Length: 357
Image (cartoon, rainbow, N blue to C red):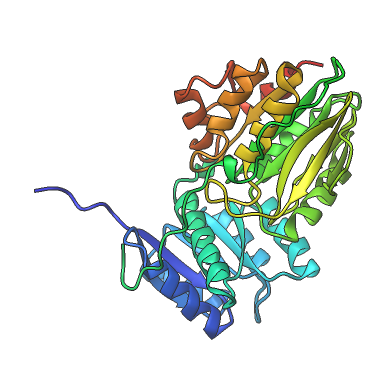
């Protein structure tokens, strides 16, 4: 008799009854997930956890009686459980969500909103993927159901990359670093960028993160690092000592004009179930930077970036994958390694020193 796969048990904590109901419906539609309860505030959640411990908690950050960050700190100090922060689109909410990441949350997503069918389907993809990624998180690095929606097609980076342009390339030896990360990547990127010297090659980074949160993320890193860290704007140049982070909800491509590298920010469909997509960045780096590029794929679930890293390697780029031991989720790096896309597989703490200058 074939053994039934154990479902991921989820507890939803949010003061909005509508949000709790919507999220319960979305998560219950997936055969691999079981919603074991909902709670309007952390006190109710704590009582429910005494009876049954969830595998993953979804947590609002702004709630009565006790805010989400305080509850998160208690969880991480007493019984570390993967926590997915579900936050609103406000600037204040994004700053609070960054505090939650600092305190051990593994993922940030937008609260599902009932908009167009396309928007709702994308929200469903992001929520379910976040729960599954969180369920696989290595917490040592932190102190087909009813009425399913039609699956969003898993598009490749071809959806965002036009046919190769015919243009004359001015030769350059200037290096550029393309980095991709997902679950666990917010803290992994902090470790990487804090180790980068002020004269390091320019960097273009895709971290799977919702719209409006990347600006707060970039500001946080900019205050911690010797290099400049900014949320990317369309046409922004890639310069030595600067890291540009793709804005949430938009794809970012590396482009080149003569000897100058810059980024292009575009709308578009989900690619490898994400926007921004690591594959879009990596494949554009392969095309426009070739052997001047350095590719780094880091912690995260799924395979976004694996094929793009291989394309970079085939174009002459030097490529690195984070190793399993230092990854919160060893999904994206593993898929890249399986394809033979990584020149080196390294622990997180050794990646910066192995980047060519």
